[in-house]
Amino acid sequence: MSGDQELEKMVASYLSDVRSQFEASTNSVEASSSSDTEQQEQEEEGYQSDEDPNSIKHEPLLEIKSETEDSSDDEQTDGPPAEEDSAEPSDADEPKPEAERKRDIKTEANQNRRMEGKRKHFMDLDDNDIRNPASATERDLMSLLFGGKSEMVTQLCSQADERGTRKRKPEHLMQEVAEASAKEEDKPEPMERSAAWHDSDDDNDDDEDNPKVKRNKYDRELGKLTYERRRKKFEQIVGNPKWADLDRVQEPDSDDEILQTVGHVVKPKKGSQELPKETIELKVLKTLNRETKHEGKIHSICFHPSSMVAMIGGSSGTVSIVTVDGVRNEKLHTIGLEKFKLTCARLTPDGNEAIFGGYRKFYHVYNLISGQSATLKIPFQETWSLRNFCLSPSGQYLASMGNCGEVHLLNAKTKELLRTVQLRYESAALAFTPDSRHLLCHSRDIEVTVYSLDRQRIVNVFQDEGCVNGSTIAVCPNGQFVATGSRQGIVNIYSLETTFQQKNPVPLKTIDNLTTSIGSITFNATSELLAIASPDVTNAIRLVHIRSGTVFRNFPLQNSQLGNVTCVAFSPSGGYLAFGNKQSYVSLFRVKHYQNY
Image (cartoon, rainbow, N blue to C red; front, side, top):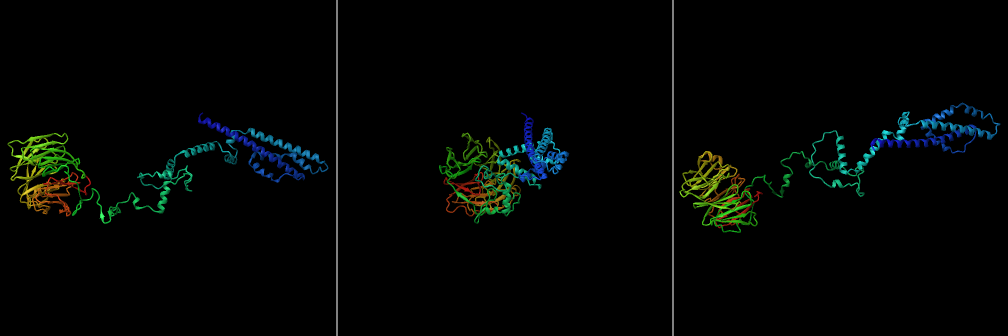
């Protein structure tokens, strides 16, 4: 059945109920009118009525119905009954029963006439009369008592909406209320931000089905306090705190700095604050080669660029590969080089190969991925070996020192000799710049030669101030500084740009804390820390703060036994620091300022 047919049925039933109610009200009006007429006639003839005077309470119904008023007017304008009434006082001699009989006949006639008029008027009443009342007063009364067609449809729709609203969840209801309140506000609102978190208790603390929940008298229809009311109440009592303002400007001296302190100690921000000077926080860990200790004099310590693994090479020809965790430092693999006195070992920048060199006319290449090793020979007529060599950061070049001042450049992948650079003095140490475009060679004299790989020629030769015999050289990873060491224990720190241009550059800082030959010099990954060591004296090791040019006063640690340090190495991110000595021990420290490996 369609919606229109169903609506028509409902209207028809509604009209039938109206007719029945109207007929019942008409009957009651007739009874009251007859009683009133009879009482009036009795008063005119001098008879006292025994009826209850409270019967006049039916008069308001007569005033409401316009039809009854018309019928009463007809009765008053009727001529013959009036004459009979006027003649009644003159007939005093007439017997009493005859007068009562005439009065009864007249009353019955009046009642029949009224009933006939009412029935005729009701028969003429149809649906149009109900929908279209005769006067404005009648229309208002009908709408108030019964309601019209439009009012009935509106009422049915409103009842259906109320039933659907009751079945909705409280969250949907709250959302509709919030949207309605937002539309009512005329002031422009700021851009809404999504909530950082949602409290599930806000959805369940005022459950409508729970009779124990205390309702708020201002919000009984919803059954719960809205979030907006709670927020406004909080602001009235507490106010809007400063930290809750998302658009506030952060001041340099904010409360966040107070939260970073514990007593009088200020905790540095991780990865944002520079390395502090004067003191450095270090933690002593287990010996790195604690499971082997038979590498001999340690010549090389190499941290893997991507894995927490280190390679340790010594003069005995044994190379150990161990994990770096500071607790167990478990040994992973051992490479034995028979009849080979190892003097230098390096890992390629990608960490796939390891190259081992010595004084012999051959060298070894070990593939860490496949585990295969290869022995490559140096041509017999050549006068060089890989006793001391270095790899470029790009992994393209390999530079090795000769016996008579030569420097040999090889292809690091194919091991093919590219060219040979002749210097005036024998080289003591080599170092590539971070961009692999220049090679710096520190001679056993006072000169430092700068060779350009792009131009394939020497671009500058400068003198190392305060140096008599050079021993080592290193360039920092950011390409800003270069450090040189001598056999007299002097370490000079230069600006790298000045060494490309000036013949006698002035060092930025000179470190003279050691008095014996500098055997190892290394920068950390952030170029903030410089480690220098001498193998001639026990515990001859210092850590230098580059920016201030000062030595940390709390290192070496008191009562530390580092031995004769022969090599120093930092992990790729500077979190670990290792020292190898002549006694075949590799000490491991944790640098707390750096969080990563």
